[in-house]
Structure formats: C-alpha cells, structure tokens
Image (cartoon, chains in turn green, blue):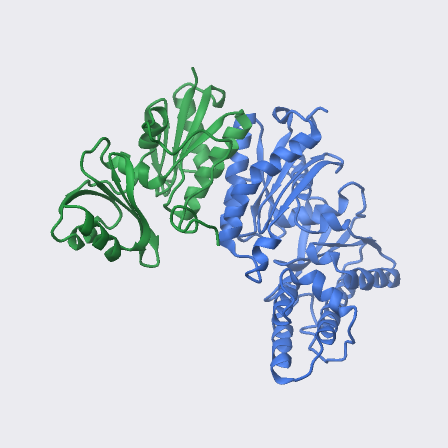
Length: 216
Length: 332
C-alpha cells in the first residue's frame, strides 16, 4: 500500500506529512527552497521516493494567497506526473482539526484576509455552521448570537476573545493549520466529508465558493 | 514517438498558460496555449490575481493536451524548461511549482528560463532564421529593448525603455479609445483605416538607443481631452505612426552602431503589420536579413521557453527554478 503525502503551505510554516510523520520548516529558514524541496527532503529522510506516493493531500486555503497557490500547484503537478489523485481540504477545516480534533464545543476558525477582513468559520462536530469573509466585529456578532461557548483558533484570537463578550471562550493557542491535520482528514475522513480525490484541485479565497460563490 | 531529445517548455509569466514540446533543432512537436484574453478583457488589462488563479486551473489540462498530442513518454524528457521571470509573481509561481511537481514525479531535470531569452529564441522555432551577429528588437506588453546577439547564449543589452513598453502604450491608448484589451491588433486595424495627421511626439527619437513611450501615451490622452470631433481611426493611425517612427529610428541607429547580419523582431508587437512593413523596408535599405517568427510564436508560448532551455543545457547552466519578477535580458 502506498503512502499519503499531505502538504501545508498556507502560512509561513510550510509542512509536509508523510505516512503520519510531520516535517515543518519556516519559509524564512535559510534551508528552505520551495515546497518541492521540502517534499524531496522529507521523502529522502524517510527512505522513500515519489514513486511510493499513492495519494496527495493539500490545504486549499484560505490563507497566504501566493503560498497556498504554490502548494496547490505543486500538488496538482506531482499528482498528474505520478498518475495519482489529489485531495484538497478547506483550510479552515484543517485549522479546526489542528486546533481541536474531535472537540464537542464549536470551533471558531479565523484567518487574516487582509483589508481589515477575516475568513471565518464555525465548525460543530466537523461541520461548518458559519462560513464568512467579513469584519471580525461582524463575525463576533454572529457567533455571540448563536453560541454560549466556543474554542477559538487562528489569527486575531485576542481580538476575537475581547469581542466575544458573554461567550465562554477557550483559546486553542493554535495560530496556523498543520499538514498533519490535512493528513488525518484525508486518511480517515469523517462520514460527511465534502472532499474527495480528484485529478486537480483549485485554491479557495474570497473570490471563490463558499465565500462569494463566483470568480469575479 | 520517443521523448529522448525533447524539452517540455512551460510559460506562465503573464496571462497565457502555454506549453510546448521542442527538440534540439527547434522543431516543435506539440504546442498549446490557454489564453486568458476573454477573462482580462473586462478589466481593460491583466488582473494579476485573476491571472494566477486561471493558470492553476489551466496548466494541467494544457500539459495533458500537449502530451496527448505528441504521444510521448514524459519520463524520457531531456528536461522541463519553465519561465522563472520576469513576470507577475503569482503567475510565475504557479508555473514553477507545477513544473517542480511534474519534474519530481517524472524524474526529469527542471531548468528555470528567462522569459526574455525565450522570446529571442522564438525566431529560430521550426526554421533556422537568425544569422549572427544579430540585432534584436524585443517589443511586447512588458518589454521594449534592443540587444546584440553574437550567439544563442551571448547577448548584450544595448537599449531599453525608460518607462512604458510599446505594448503597454498600445493597450492604454486602446482603452482611451474604448477599443478594449488587448490593444495591439485592434489599434493597428483602426490605424489602417485612418490618416496619421495628428502630430504626436516621437520621444527620444533623435539620440541614443533607449525608448520612452510614457510621453506619447500622455500626449494621446491630452489630445482626446482637449479636442472635439476626433476620429478613432485618425488617432490610432497617428499614434501608430509615432510608435513606428521611434522603433525604426532606433533600429536604424543600432544597425549603424553595431553592424549585423540580421535584424530579429520578437515579442507580441512583432505581430503588428505596420511594424513588419516598416522593418522590411529598413532591412532592404540596410542590406540586413529580417527575421520574424511566425505570428503564433510572436506572442507568449511554451515552445520558445523549451527552445531557450536547450541553450541552458548546452552551457551547463542550471539556473534555479525560483521566481524572479525582474530579470535583464543578459541574465540566464
């Protein structure tokens, strides 16, 4: 049985998980060259080659726009050249899995969207009950109306906690998603997972579904 | 057929997703371009963020099309050549990271190629046209420059634009005239039906080998604002006449300063009928061979990147496949 390779490039912490073991390297580390370089290093260290890969998984974002695209482009290219498929997982779902896998409480996931906005989702038992690209204050208003307690993960956690007056908030301490979470969601997907192997995948940002539903 | 002796070229520096398969003699085995013109037309120019996203969606289908057309085994490729710059960072990254994934899976080398060198080498695709030493005029939406070429890898920049490229000026004038994007073909077409009676400036025409088109573009804008009853065709004809006068004057001066066997005109604006006609006349006068790539190789394409990648292998030049938004024509 072949290996599953999971790729994370949505933040400054690039990550690769191979067969359940994660390697993380910051993009500003002098030894970092590219996501491809990190994959090759990880494979070599584990005594494998690309031919051993059976499935590739990647975080589709939202996150850092350019670096998400780097990861997705590499994953598509590698999958095509190997004749394998690629699984793209929503970046906020990966963040929820990173911060609080199997949590009973709702998980509020936030990523910086620039221009004063955030990408936000609330996951309850792995299912999204809120998904918005908006001001953090607007997100907080929606969360206060719907929940009495949440776990918060991602960017702007301190500001979110301050805005969630009256809600019992647990700070996950998790800032960015991990490739290990993408790996888990791919290898053991929940029954209602909305991701599946495909020939190619596309990144998610404010111009795509589910945030606006269309490319401008 | 066998893939031995073939390079796969990938070009994503701007708004065309292009892939080509070329042998060492420049024969094009397969080529495909997924154009984004219809996408960017609504913005009146290239929208970088949208371009990058479209590359992600188009690049694998375009690679697949070229491989299916050729029937080759990609694991036997000599290398993958991919544009590393200059260009839009988000677009370059998609090409480079996709190529990196393809190269890793197929187990073939990857070569980062200077897009400008790709344009220079486009003149020899399918047929050996260039006689060295050659004078190169590269005219496109992103570049306007003159270079001296003593051989495929021996290139010296001798003139460059000080501001806008001529292709950019075409696009902006087209927008001012309400003609849409891209501007080159439609402005040339309108110019063919007009009278060039408006005395637009010919910036820096009388000295040196550098170019400037910003002032010309502004002059067109001021004319349109100040005058009433102008005809689109006459404005286009007058603008094109100014561009051609400058381009031809610079080529004439360059050929006088650097005696050459051929004048090579490459880049998207090389498709311009007025430029082709003016260059033919100049070359007749100067006794120089005119080398123009077929129109399909004038605009961005993957075959020219594959062609240039052969020069990198020939000189054992293993340039990193890392994005560079800015590169001179002398860089590998």
